[in-house]
Length: 457
Image (cartoon, rainbow, N blue to C red; front, side, top):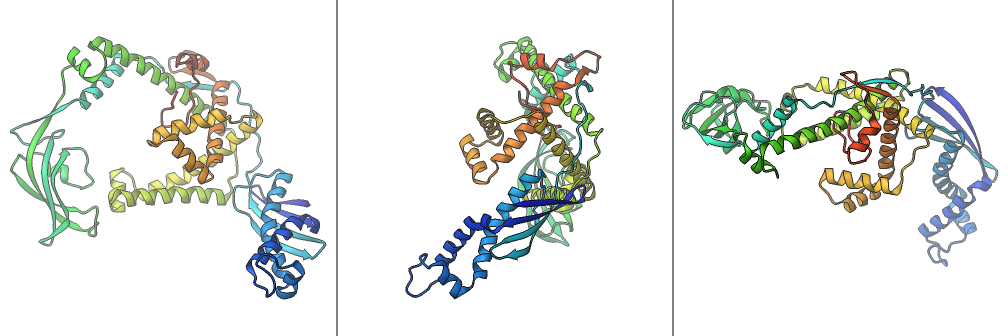
């Protein structure tokens, strides 16, 4: 087999592949067997029709077509390996020549990962947040605990922001009751920001036993987007009462006997979280610093596929929410146009990140051990709330184990970048990532989620 490469653009090539007919023999033998199973010839059992009879009865073209259907995809894969290109899209393949008994020729146009060099990343200067834990940090954690253990107490006064009300709601359009827009005994925190515009304003100042209506746009159901009169009937008003910060609260909210012990534990955990954040920030910022030095042309098909996948996920989220599109975007305080613009930006960066990390993986000869793959599946299963063996089977059945291994080695490449950087915190103190690994249970921190999320240690 002989392969020639023509560069159509920095991100697209055309392969011209010439294959001697002898190399098609395994596929041709398989083609004869397949055709023999499909045809019926008097005097021969299914699958036992000789090759010469098949050609006499049905023509050699039938066998050649079946042969090429089997052989060309395999030959394309071999050609890609031989010329060392990295496809990022499905190829456009065309058989351009069939010289029966001699050779065949086909072309394949495909988008590829562009060629580029990765600059030296050793010693990149990176600044991360300080791991110092302040009293305010501890107080914020304590306040969060108090919120979780707060109780609701009924009050004989009008509702204010932060209070909880129990209410009945119904909607009417031109005096006609909309049955699917009714709800009873709904508990709601005033000021929480309902997708039903005007609800918070209507509730403030209402007391138990009062009824009020307001006009708004419905956000779900068959009448989504239409203006309606929403009638609220407040059944009760309750205020949130936070527990006192004392030893009794420590015993209620934790395994500790005293408030001082709880505070010490919170301080230690906060420091641990901040150390993990330092590692994550170091890796992400080292990667960003490297990306800023590289200009990489992106394949159009890969970029479009990435954007389309994000749009598909968004459509699924909207459908699952039960809200109209307008209400969904209002809930997240954004617009469809803004989300689409983010998709374009984030997709371009995701592709660039993948290309760069793959280069580092190859240069550093990073691989995945069986134990690392097992640990990955176990951690991901815990996050998803499923059994590890179920997730492993799902990955295997859907050919996603390779994607999992790619994710693991790319995380390793991020670790390489972070470890190679010169890291200081915002106070000017040197940050030793390896010392952090040792302090946190002696394990290396491996980021498995987007940069905005905290890593598992």
